[in-house]
Image (tube, rainbow, N blue to C red; front, side, top):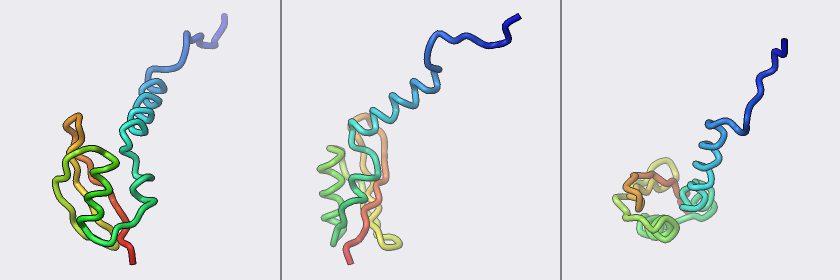
Length: 87
């Protein structure tokens, strides 16, 4: 008997992971773009995140050398984006 399992294609988990990564990149919701830039004020951090996400800024908090910007995305999710403080 053949003990090897035959599959018809990629797993569902693999497909979902690929789709989620593609969606995050398409919406610009990854940490890398915001992390590459630095902000000198909470207003600047909020403007940077708003420009990249297109969402509604809910608040900004300065904490441990970074601005934490809370944004409501177009799909109704709340995200927190960290933007390093310019020193």
